[in-house]
Length: 157
Image (cartoon, rainbow, N blue to C red; front, side, top):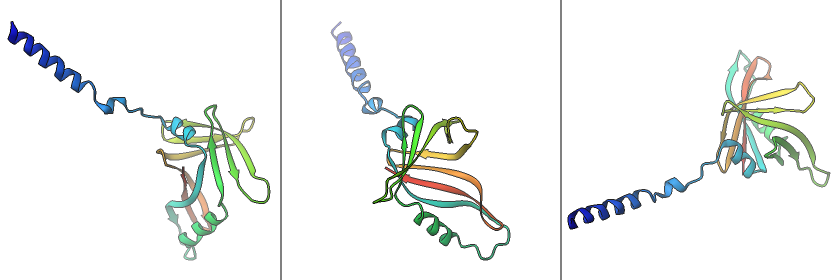
């Protein structure tokens, strides 16, 4: 009987150690929760991806990205839990420019922006979000004569 009690105590002890795993206590946030909790997101740049150049020898990817990124400095994205979002352009000493949108995540990897009362919908693909980085791609944009590409938006917390 003593051996049976000892085996039972050892078994209970082993179970208690395996059930107290720290990884079980980690809270895993959804993409929506990460986007809301880490707002505002600072725009850091656009990177051209999936470039299709149909013979435009004058197109310079680096120059295009630099020009585009310089014109979009001091831009912040704010995502709210109620499905609204704001894109804020800081332009001191002038007042901030704010554009309000609604947003939702579609199919777990697409970000949909739309204005209430409008038929205008913008769908971004390849949504990736962590606690410190947010990125999404707007596909098939004509960026220059005979050149199409995706624009990957890069944001940080």
